[in-house]
Amino acid sequence: MLKIYNTLSKQKEIFQPINNDKVGIYVCGMTVYDYCHMGHARVLVMFDVITRHLRRHFLNVKYVRNITDIDDNIIKRAVENKEDIYTLSNRFIDAMHEDEHELGILPPDIEPRATNTMEQIFCMIKSLIQKGFAYQAHNGDVYYSVRHFKNYGKFSRKNLNKLEVGARIKVESAKRDPLDFVLWKMSKPNEPNWSSPWGKGRPGWHIECSAMSTHHLGNHFDIHGGGMDLTFPHHENEIAQSEGANNCTFVNTWMHIGFVNINNKKMSKSLNNFFTIRDVLKNYNGEILRYFIMSSHYHSPLNFSDENLNKAKSSLSRLYTTIRGLNTCNVRNKEISIHFDYLVRFNEALDDDFNTPIALSVLFELAKTVNIQRENNTDQANTLAQLLKKLGGYIGILQMNTENFLKQGISLSDEQINTKITNRNKARINKDFTLSDYIRDELAKFDIILEDNINGTTWRKK
RNA sequence: GGCUGGGUAGCAAAGCGGUUAUGCAGAGGCCUGCAAAGCCUUAUAGACCGGUUCGACUCCGGUCCCAGCCUCCA
Image (cartoon, rainbow, N blue to C red; front, top):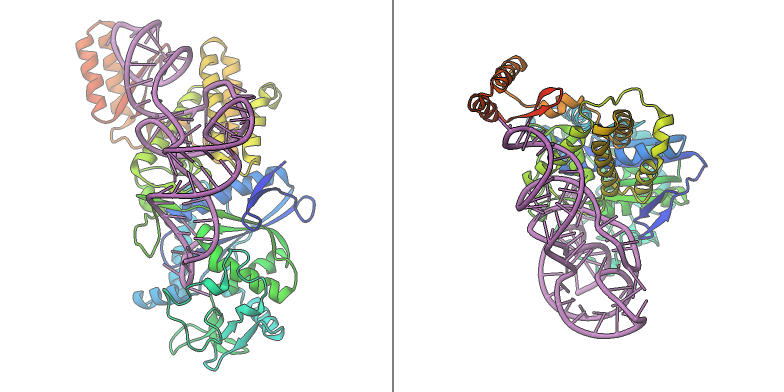
């Protein structure tokens, strides 16, 4: 029984798809004018975890994650770079896909782009004008008339009369009401534009998501998600647009991912305190980042720091160390089923609003059992290690080659290291421990830690 | 001003009205030539003040503090 916290009702609810085994999920993806930062990484990773788990529950999951490839920021950046918007956005889309690959993120089923959805956008705006939810102002822009939508503000719990409108952004004077937001914006000379029934221009920020989501998933679908900062105004406006135009419930379950913080402050473009995914990947591999993101619940703030990333690395290393040297191939479901309770508890954790910290704690309990068994009962240890790797795979970790994970980032060659290990072991046989310890210290300078086992000496990076 | 969240051990992070969370770091032990890894044992919690209860970290009320939103943001 899968439970999901719904922003709409502010409580955990039993999740029931609209159509039996079919689940439609839409996630607000990137506006592509820069590299993805850690905030994006959290949304990308968490919805990857969420859709992986949904696919284990339901046969037919359709995951749509959009790309907004036209907006003011993109236009501004393209002008700065003296390039056209497509060159700019294509470059950052490619970069995003590279980042996702490193983070072990499975691609969404559909990745629609705003610029390929113009017809649907026109259609929706027409419908909104027709039904009295929108108007074209004297400057040509088309606005959504917020006070015409009686539920406006309900979703994000805003009292329209107590909003500090214009506190931060100056109010566009063509609006009939300061609360109104733009659906279609007339283009200035030399700006990218599309011909519309209202003149040459471009879509406003929110309309593209209403158009893309309903086009691919229908007017009423199961799950809509994104970062917490999108609840207002973006998702509030999406609801107003979609329900105004289609006259039916838009989305059943709304999911929002908490912020990534730096020094207890939200990481954001405006504060310019953000780290890009690719910067972080220079020092920590994708699985470590992924583990770090999963180590807190998706609602809680996630504090980004080297200290916390290093902890994630140590923790993940424990799991890899546990399966090291064991046979994790040839998963034998029959034998694994004996240890069903780990699987059950792992699944229960994810069923409870995708509680990844609990799911991870089950993996550590399993790891402890593997370590206890590995000396007495190798078969048992192999089976449990297989289960550990399998469960890790459900949330996208423990998928690297174990040796590669434990040895990455060493400047010496395998040959150099092995020679030193051989020399050290010769010294140990001769009981020349001064020499053997000297060699070990030498390797330690390169962050290489030796481990003497019954079967010989292995090494790993510190 | 209006509206959301949250304050848990050295750090990170969950569940739970009574019984070990978990990980990293620490202490003692086993193992080891010594280590490392692993295992065993172990210390350190629930912002503050009340209330409900046989019993509260958990429920209720209040206080303080922190973060976020109120038309750039994921």
